[in-house]
Length: 122
Image 1 (spheres, rainbow, N blue to C red):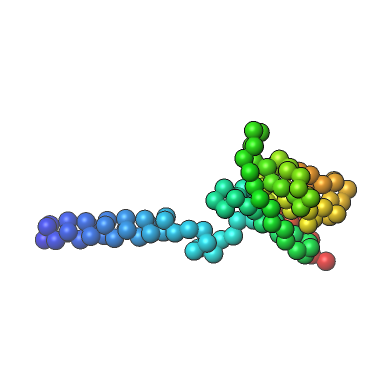
Image 2 (cartoon, helix red, strand yellow):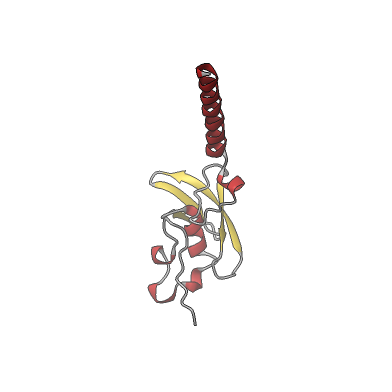
């Protein structure tokens, strides 16, 4: 009886370990998550900036410079990436005129938690 109990505990432990490993190794895309804080183009060499206001998308190459990453604007100017390269490209191109009172730059970028918006019911 005791040996059967030990075998059952061992089997449950192995099954739990396998299940936790499978859950841990699944990627965010498999789980349906989408990172909206932007990317730095480490894997692809370029970033895609999506407008938050429906103004389209923009793609730009990323390079490593002396002071960190830089993204190229459509006119050919290389700009240093701030929080993320895709957010810098978005703010400087497709959402340039959406700056409002705060202006463009870091005040118009999404933070480390992504683009958080507060909407009040009317």
